Length: 334
Image 1 (cartoon, one colour):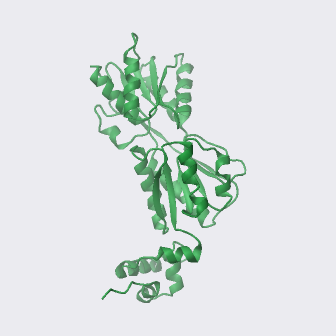
Image 2 (image 1 turned 120 degrees about the vertical axis):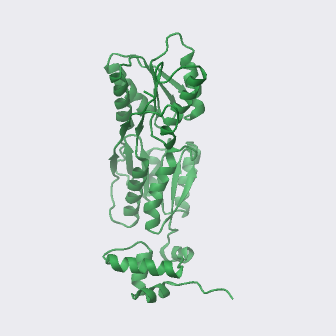
Image 3 (image 1 turned 30 degrees about the horizontal axis):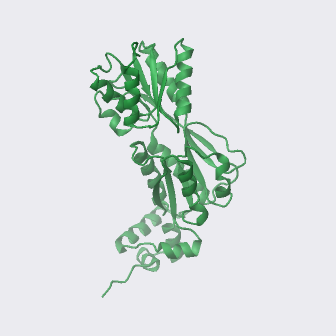
């Protein structure tokens, strides 16, 4: 005989509270409920194996209790920590998170953003490489909040679109200044096209020209190890090589390290290498990679907190822009 599924009333009886109080807690609306009551209800739900009926909730509230996290490359090690941060906040509020890979293409970004207009998700957090603020107007004005994770501060005008950003231009500027301080004057930069390329190249160029240097940027179509390997090979074919290579992200820096190793070039003795992002592999490669940390887990947490505040009506109106910190991580590649 099939066991009866636990209900909110069962949880209420075990915890010694009203069903209304249980409903508030299990839907994430903690409000002024005392911490001891909150923990007692949570413990009772776990003991009974209570599982919310999401279909019934959706019919009652017109919500799916699901948010979408959209990223341009789900295989990039930068994004798992970001998504874990988003998930930690969202699940605590009763929301599931689905990850969507857009490949950074405008068609896929628009396609998945339109999910929200079809009622498939309640909110969106994303890294969008091609869409502009106006592209989000119909979604956010239709009651579906969107939080963008950006590489620079961006204005949204009257559109209620929220932005969490790390100043990539400032991060690149700081890294190049660090390399100059290490005695480097010929510093090349390698970057993939699209995404944060523009602001990171801009920061690199500003720092280098400000010290009397000549910018040298090698672009590749891919923002990954293969792109970094190819870009480094272009640099290695030159008669006069740089003394340092700054990569627009860690994956490209790792590709450059491999190209230099294959060519018998010592790092950092012959050419220093620095990256951007501080992915987990950055400390594991040989030599360990000097890079710019963006603290993506914390960025994910802040983005999810902002989205939850919108969903719960804690604030409304014009969009916001919140800057998150970066930090230079010095390792043995420089």
